[in-house]
Amino acid sequence: MPAIVIHSIEMTDEQKKIIADKFISTFSEVTNVPKDRIYLFFDGCTLDNVAAGGVLFSENPPQNAKAKFNSK
Image 1 (spheres, helix red, strand yellow):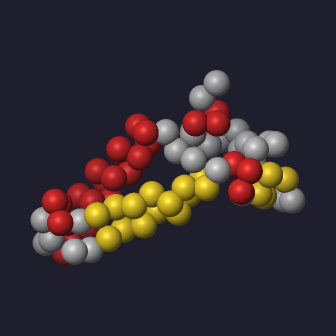
Image 2: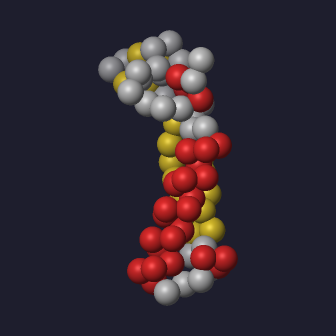
């Protein structure tokens, strides 16, 4: 059974649902593998484990990212 792995910073459950639907649907259409046989894994990183420009995302989250950390 095929597997898709998404490496990303934190995402909301709604974002994960949308990504899972789109990736699995596309993979199924291209490969003719039934959707229920395709697995998708989210390998998320917490904001204190990701940095850009030498600054941890937990200290300065990207403002254009729609994720848990910007939902407040």
